[in-house]
Length: 232
Image 1 (cartoon, rainbow, N blue to C red):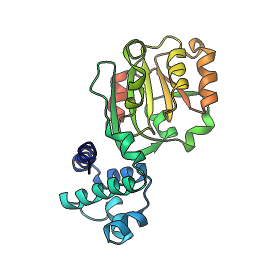
Image 2 (cartoon, helix red, strand yellow):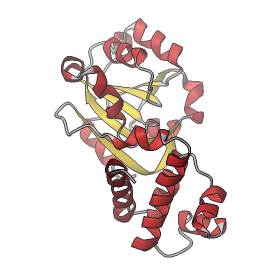
Image 3 (cartoon, one colour):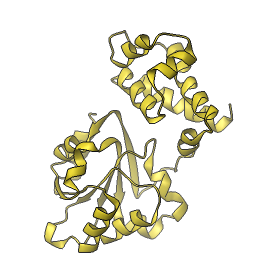
C-alpha cells in the first residue's frame, strides 16, 4: 500500500478509535466507500452479522486489531476497483484561517441538519429529506474567494463530499454559489450565515435550484452552531 494511502488508513482508524460511537463511525466509512456488509465480510472472512453487530454497537467496542483490519479492507477493496475513493480522500488541505472542517460520527438528514442550525430553506426544500450530511465546513466567504486557489476547492470537503458548506461574512450569497457552480464537486447543502432573505441575490437562488442543492439561511450565532454540531 502506498504511503499516502497508509496515512489515509491511519486517519480513518484514528477517527474510529477516538469517536464516542465507534460502530457508527465504522458504518459511516463503509458507506462512504460504497462497500456493502456482505462484500466486506467476504473480504475479511467473517459473517456479515458480525459487521452489523459492530456497526450497531451490539458488540463491545472493537479493538485496535479489528479496526485495523476493517480500515485496511476498505482501502484495499477500493484500490481493487480503481481507487477512486481513496484518491479523493488521500490529499488533505492544510489548516487555514479561512475555513475549517468537522466530520460526524454518523450521517444525518438535511432536515435534521437544518433544524440543528436553526435554519430556513429558501431553495430546493423537497431535496432535504433525501440529502445526507456526513460533516460540515465553515468557510469565511470573502477570505476564501480572495485567497483560495482553484485546486484547493476539492479539499474543502474534508473526509466526505456529502457535507454542508456554511458560509460566513456573506453579503448576498452570489459569490459562494458562483464558486460552487463552476466546480464539478458539489456539497450536499449550503448555509448562508446571518443574511436576511430579502438580501439574498436572485442569482444565488437560481444557481442553487439549477444544481439542486438545498440553500438555507440561519442567524444562529456561530458558537451556538458549533456547539450543536460538534456533539454529533
